[in-house]
Image (cartoon, rainbow over all chains, first blue to last red; front, side):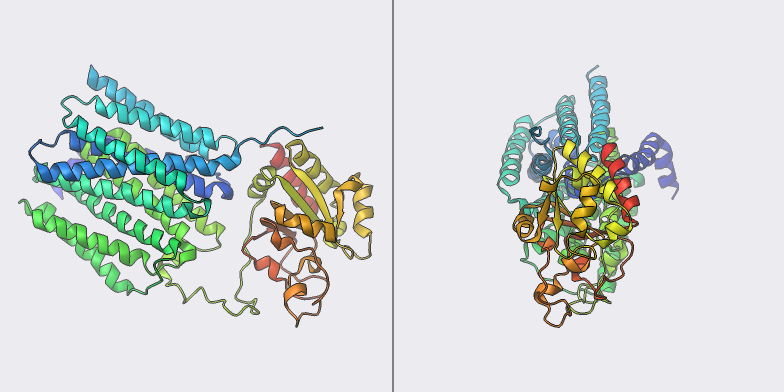
Length: 106
Length: 455
């Protein structure tokens, strides 16, 4: 228990960010129309692919002879990239329906 | 110096993430929002490459090239109807990546740090649940996995065991390489057990929840590295995803608890079509309606006696004008007996300057309805009741109707759920395409005019 408290105290900056981010996340999408639910879910799914940064860091610091670590890290980068690239691409496809309509005649 | 530059890049990336999500919650700016969030992601990735002492760069680039190719291929080739499955799949990949990072890091981390250990275990457990859960959700949407009932208590016990083992690993003070894999396996099975019993129709809500979980794992990974772009981005997704889950459940007229803890079949009933006591009509608000209307190509108004009673013909004309300004085609579908006498509606609408060529007779309108994006039924009931076509026992069976359920969306504006002139219930109100907008027709329409104006 002491160690947990110690950890929070040492990393309090992170915990402040944590708490504030919770509120930002809620605030930012508080007025979203139903038609955008699925695209927004897809878009935030793409954002959760930000673990790619962690994957790059972990593979980047694995020793070249640690084959288990290398293969797990490789897989992590691969899957996170799938999440990011696929996520943004599919969101963009969904949002194409909101393209501006051509100006009306008359 | 390079470290400071990386930090600033991460900071800018976080700002771009927030802006991106913000813009994505409005139709006009949604595509721009997606592009902005993407640029933030690219910035974060580039910055992480600048990290001093980064090895295996070729390996990283190779994995990224494979992932990019695969991601683009899946995203481009999937059919529009299969998109939720794909989102679920991508989400599972993110969760798996977080769990894998946890596995690699476990070997490297000095295990005397309880706090870091707890964060790592959270990444492992939640990432694994998100991975296996997402794949099951995808399979259920695809229809390849059927509903299976799993004992809720058993599933909960699994989670409890996984957490207990994780706590033991953290506090034991010694490396437990085997137990770590056991935790991952139990968490994976829990993910399956968690999603299996949930009905296919509720999957979007579940995927949104799993998406939120993946965000949390991104954040715990960020804590592991003291990396703020992962922490902030992950929590942003976690909390936005959670709110989105609640909103989606609400739009489907379900509570999240209901979705998660009611096994399919026990609550979903409603197989007997005639029992309207079980059925629930879905509501929509003025804001959502205005968005549907403004982004439609063709809107058809089906007026009924209720429109006349509410003296709403001028308001409906105002809405028509403002929608036409936005490039939406607005037509009126006039049923021969709409109102209380033939031609009643034509007169009322003409009086408020609706041009005659916009008033379309029933038969011509029925041909146009399949290509109509939104039908607004205002104060009409029996003239759009599908029972006239398909229920021989109904008193109005055989009456020709406006087949509004052929359109993409149906909005019914009504004061309450009461039945129409003929005194019979209307199955249209419980149709999957139908949303109810309750209120006095004039007030509702005036409200819609100002919502559309404000867009």
